[in-house]
Image (cartoon, rainbow, N blue to C red):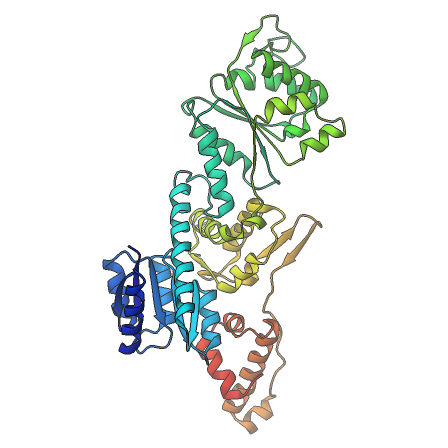
Length: 458
């Protein structure tokens, strides 16, 4: 049975929601404040929390923050008064699933709760699937499809062709297929086809015997010998020359190789996983790739989505890379500001996961505080060969008073003018988003809202 925790300091509201939700078949607990709610969350496994924002003691926003710190997957729906839309937006930006405005109707509550619990079930299922692939970070619908495909194809000996843009993690998917296969205890041997000169490629794939060419001072095993009974991963398969394509096709058809300069044919039993960022069907039409080789390789085609197609995985990846590089670089950077995260969520990532990793590594290296701020992010646009800095807050403010004016007007008045100027500039740079402006000024959202009202700004 779905279990829901209702948090509100008004007893009448708690009782109303409990009666309503019990009639709908939910198991319901209630709490009069945030502190008691957290105690109940420690004791029970709730599927959803519904909390008022305005409460005495620990308010709803503080409760939301505490819940996301302890159990980030637990969905939270906020109840907000009609007069506090900023609080609702702030709650959504900081992890709330949705909000219900007062006064609300019963059908609206039912709809939001149904969506939240359904989403929670989907996330739990996705997390269960993704846990089987700890080497790949992702819980989005797109990645769940990849995980399911890996589970289906891994136990078979079928060759796999992985499509995907550069930086999407095609080799990680290939490794996962191998690790979940029946030959996981055998070798996984990768080779990047574009990184090896044409004159050496045959030797790299099939090996050579001593004296077969200048520099061949000893016998050498090639990719297929090293991967025998295991898996060979051919990355950037679309870069192979026509001659090597022909020889690779023969290996796939006959299951045998002949080392360069050798006379003896050797039998091999190798599963091939190939990857490409090209559209091989177009390469075939252009006469640059053999159609018969394509069909041998693409027994099971598998496409890895770009990062912009699975944006919901960005926070998971950011958290993973933050922990990784904070440890490697011996920094105490443990989190990223919500505005910096918003910058990333609005970015297209032409370099995909590899680019995101580079951005976070650089951010950790440059950040002097314990949280990554927007000014520590540099977004590299590989498409246009230029770098674009994230929005920064580094405007030079004009002096609001000379020494004579300072003594004439007094310190308090001068500081007030400077504070107004700073707030106005922060609002302009953040497109008048109070939440973003508060982050730029490094003050709380409540403090900024109070000052804006106090100075009648905007």
